[in-house]
Image (tube, rainbow, N blue to C red):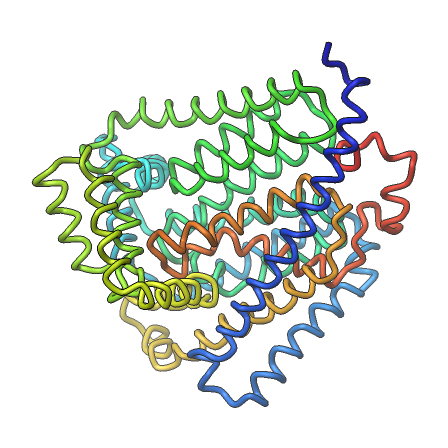
Length: 497
């Protein structure tokens, strides 16, 4: 009979395995982040700046963040409620100022989202596909309530950013402690790419709010020992985020695996928790489909993945979107139908690899640099198409300054995240942190195959912020030191079982 008491010896062995896994994940991730740092440091736009200036800026940024981490009044003395109130004011104020200064108009896919949301607000609820349809549906409901205006979409982004900041604090507190959580939230508040993304009608900003909600609820369930109802909520959040961006299906699969094999709880509890997570996920996806109806042929998840693999295997376009792959994919759909997409794509990718294996190997490096060493997407897309005005003229003539600001910040975050990986102590909630690391490492692997765009790393850069906060703060849950956190009296805590 599977009881909690009988599960303890097995849980202790399992916990040691999770600790080892977490440490190795942190080391591998640190190596990858160091590689991304080097690529960012040596490529445009930083490559065009003198090494002395780059060094002064990055070191100055790192020292500034470390000073924040050591500022006792801000990190420890101010109450949590007061800190979060000021954090929300900062997050909202900075983003509203950016939106007021930069009148971004939708372009490319973002214009498609805006037009689809406008259509939905008028009563047509058809959703184009699971990989992008959830965001127009969400935005369309907002347009229906407040009017089909770009300011509504941008305000929704500001609200989603504030919610992400609050949820990120809770998530990071459970993972690495409240001091590191405060530094993480402060970094999030001033993160240039995220600030700039709020003026764009993009999926990323509301997506990370649902994603962090799911992760925060999941981690809180594990820390506090709550019942499966919490995992039901987490599953709904993951399902909703999957409707917005289909990549959350991977996060859900990893979360379900970690729940099922997690240490310190009985097999029955693990099975019930995994089932609750799955039910919540299916309910969210099902409701989305019920509201929007079935996806049109050729826009489902399998077809979308096939298109991504096709695009990601093209050396000529560096694994990014191209007219050539778009035309080829449309031809496959037209002549063979959606069911033939996987086989057709597999054949084309095999031909590309065997034709020039060394070129394909170089493609993997190029894709890694595009995906993980570039944080310019916010500056690029927020200024790609703007309403006429004096500010627009000024920004267009100084857009490279925005690129430098965004990339300098990101390089600083990468450096601090590497420092966090080096300092990493695996016994600090190995189950939860192992899941965070596994998510990033999984997407590093997936995007060696799938299409890459620099903005695709935007959600996973939150983990880099957490590592940065950890790297500059004492890694303790209660503010009194790691030793007390893992004292004998605390071994009943799920994270240290």
